[in-house]
Image (cartoon, rainbow over all chains, first blue to last red; front, side, top):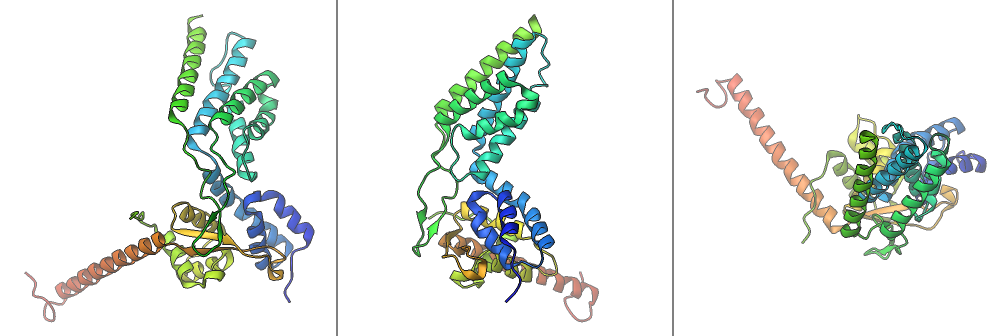
Length: 200
Length: 125
């Protein structure tokens, strides 16, 4: 009988793996186990691939773009309210951190919800974005996701052989009229902010 | 009938590995081992295999299911994969294209040889 990873080592590796794939990836790593350092190195080498694959499956490009615009506008608005002379590029950093937080949370949870991911994003951006802007971005991102987030709790599909198959991607299409409406609101807000910024 | 997408070389390797393995034994580690054997001497990472399996499943070329947990895997389940009809068609089309490519290559090589040795093959014009 070969060597096996200790439960503690598996727990450490499990922390880094998204819940949706943790079971099978830990099983695969168990089979390939040679030594603790190699086990951890294999886990770390796998992480980027697993993370990007999960993001590709869980993130809807349209919805992410809309949320990114709204989050950026939240930070821009908050900065503009605090001081009328606002750099339009500075809010990009907390907005990017928020989106990273949203993508990470969606990738690591089994069923992406409307509030948890924006909350994680706002917390991640808190040191550079501030409380008011974070709250505004949380409210806008959560509301948008409540309306547009594709239903993620679909039951597993039955395959021809009776096996269970994971839904390929979280999947009902986003309603385009809502998308257009939100994009229009975001553009009007951006235009109003820029006009105020450059004409004042 | 849905038309399968054209496959990349690595996708062909992964689909061939799944096809070559028994239904209940085509999972991450065994697919990686088979792909590594097919791609030798190039090394293949397990992460690349996972990404490709996810992408092929999203395209509907393969399907997956979880088996019961086993002691051999520390009480963890396997995710097994099988080729769907669309995947089989895509792989067959890729094989036909590869065969045509090989035929054209062999023909071109033969012509080059005959040009270099005019006494034996085709006459040089």
